Each structure stands twice: as C-alpha cells, then as structure tokens.
Amino acid sequence: MYMSRFDRISLGHFPTPLERLDNLTARLGGPEIWIKRDDCTGLATGGNKTRKLEFLVAEALRWGADTIVTHGATQSNHVRQTAAAACRTGLGCHALLERRVTNMGDLYDETGNVLLDDVFGCSYEFRPEGLDMNAEGQAAADALAERGRKPYFVPGGGSNPVGALGYVGCADELVRQLDLDGLRIDAIVHATGSAGTQAGLLAGLHAMSVDLPVIGVSVRAPAERQRANVHRLAEATADHLGVRGDLPRERVLVDDTQVGEGYGQPTDEMVDAMQLLAREEGILLDPVYSGKGFAGLVAMIRRGEFTKGQRVVFVHTGGSAALFAYPHLFSDKTAAKAA
Ligand SMILES: *Cc1c(COP(=O)(O)O)cnc(C)c1O
Image 1 (cartoon, helix red, strand yellow):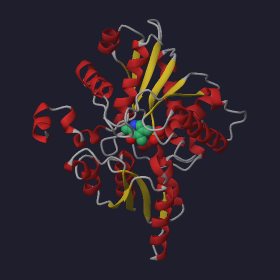
Image 2: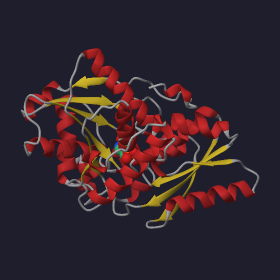
Image 3: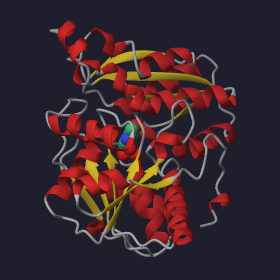
Image 4: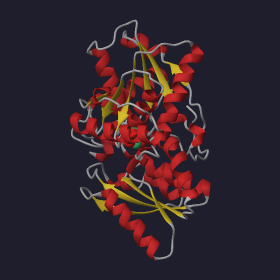
C-alpha cells in the first residue's frame, strides 16, 4: 500500500500475530475464529493506539512539538500508550481525564491505566463528564503554548485521518497475512469507540478494493450515530490516502447490542466473554472495549449469523491494563471486600 510515503516512527512490534483459536472454535461450534493480536503491539502493554501513534507522533516531531496534549476517559488506554510514546520520543505528555465512569470504587482513579500514566510521568487533570473534550484539550494545549511550550494536540483515541492511517496499515498487514497463509475470511469484528480503528480498516480495504464486512461492536454510541462517525472519518482517511471512489455508507456495519448501561459499565455478556476467551485460550480482554467487542462476536455466532464453514477474524484491540480497575467483576474475594 506504499504507506512509507507518510511520516511514521516505529513504536510497536509489527506485524502482530494472526492466530487460529481452536478451542474456542470447537466450543462455540460455529465459524472458524481467528484473532489478530493487536493487544501485542508491544508499547506499554500494547493495544490499538500504538499504530495510530506511529503516525501522530511522527507529525508532532515534524512540527517541532515538545509536548503532546491529549484526553480520554479516566482508564484511557489511549492516554497510557500516548504517555509511553512521548517518553520514547523525548516529548512531554499532558492529558485530560474525563470522569465518564464514577461508580467503580476508590481504586478506579488510581490503578490500571492511571497507575501506568504515573509511571510514565504523564501529567494529567480530571474533568467532569459531558464537556466537549476536544475543545478542552485544545484549550489546554493553547494554555501551554502561551507559556512558551510547543504542544501537539492529539484528539480522543488518536482518531483523525492521520491516526487512522495506523489501521489502514493494519488492513494491509492483515491482507498480506491472509495471502501468505492462503486464507479466505468472511468478516472482521472488533470493538469501536472513537472510530479510528474501523475507519482506518475500511479506508485501507477500500483502497485495496477488498469488500470484506468490518463489524464494529460499539462500546458507547447507538449504532446510527457510530455509523455516521465511522463513515465520516473513513471518508476523510480515504481522502488523505488519495483513494478515488466513494466509500458507501452501507459498508459501515455497527452492532450496538453490547453497550449495556453505557461506556465502561460492565455487562454480564462482557464478563462471560472475558472468562470464555481467558479459560479457552489463555488470552486477556478488557471490560470496556475488547470484552464487549468479543461479547458481540460471541452473540453473533450464537444467533447463527455465521455458518460453520466460514472464517471470522476478531481484531483484539488490547486494553487489559484496565482490568485492574474492575477487580470485583472477576474475583469473589474482591467482590466480598467491596460489599
Ligand atoms: C480505543 C480502544 C478501542 C476503540 O478503538 P477506536 O479506534 O477508538 O474506535 C478498542 N479497544 C481498546 C482496548 C481501546 O483502547
């Protein structure tokens, strides 16, 4: 795909493995299930933001920035990976953490990803839920600029046409792996939040004229809103790539059956899916994103939406560092103490 025409630095371990999940496939009795291990990107416990940051931080360096400013929810995987990327490249990192989840107990604001933000020396301030966080982040960047710093602002989740190039690259990488193994697949499934992952995958597949369904399992927005968000960013990313031809809205598939009570709020299906993948395959998911994404795939299989002869790839977007902020869901001991 000639991605090297775009500025990029190396932050992760690529290509990430593409693995067949034999135990899980046998257990569910449906399609052959494969997993693209983007939880193994290598940067600060891994995850999908690493691919985006390879392009975003390259742009920050090109612009002569000395500090990255970004934002996310309290347990943001994006902020954690951005903080690590800033360390690697000698930049400062300042983050705004939105209190989107306030009912998970005392440890929630200190452990998991927040603890790792501290380890990386990232400065952060909290914000209440419901503000325009991109505007807040831009204002924080402007305030730093007034004090003589050179901030580079990364939007939530690193989701703009530059960050989404990371998932254009992932689409290319996945198609190469399929070609190498002589594999034909029927669908790609993953968790979708700030939309950059799905938008990048769709723009990349579109550029290669590959018509595979990419199903985003929403962790927050209702399906129609998420489809609009993904479609807008996929088109902007395709423009940035210089791809000709429309990317039809029908290509954007979103399943919103796993949101439950909202962003970061656990569901029984998520807990079951996390235990299923852990106990069948020894692979960790997370309660906010990949656990719900995977629960979405399990539900599709149980509803009979894939047949036995088909093959599905789940893109594991990472996130297990957030697991430690939700101990009561998985440990009877912790649940008893919290009660
Ligand atoms: C950010 C994130 C996602 C969602 O990806 P988007 O590009 O924001 O849609 C999925 N899984 C994990 C673990 C994440 O941190």
